[in-house]
Length: 221
Image 1: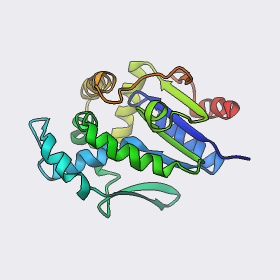
Image 2: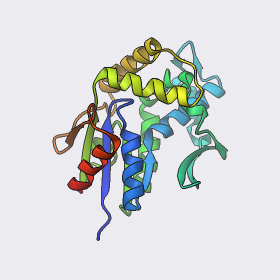
Image 3: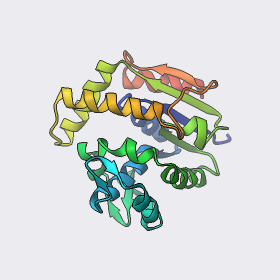
Image 4: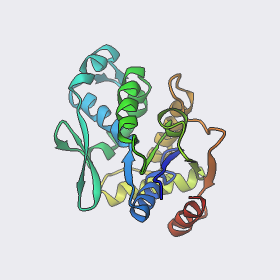
């Protein structure tokens, strides 16, 4: 059976990556976390002092793009992201990175670089990618497009639990503020904003279990 491309868009902490990973495991597809790629660029900018007081130095960041190499490697059946040869999976999930990633993602040259790399990854199908502009920009011809959402309170609790499980200190109020700021930036940026494309199927998983969510999408496939 022909392997299709599945594009999953949606807000932060609504379970996009969880769904994408579950689908990839079930179908034997490749899962690419596009958000992790933007987080890695943000981490690089933090490490190299290209952001001061939450203001990115756009020119220096653009000049640095050729020096940023991203790659995914399979470790224990998981796609792990490497930044310039270093495993950064845990570092990119920090609050510090989360607070600036939307600012970095709003730089058109950053998006152009990463969209080009993402499109190369999906040339042969059999790929599941989640993010903000997957169905609208990266894979506009994807056979299946999903727009995943959930209530704000559910999203806050999910992200807080995720951070706790990784030993990252935070509060519910901090998480709520971060998600609110990211939602605004993601939906209002001039370049590739988060939108629900006309041919996307909406999946509100506020009251769905992980298993129910997976079965719903498998039925669509």
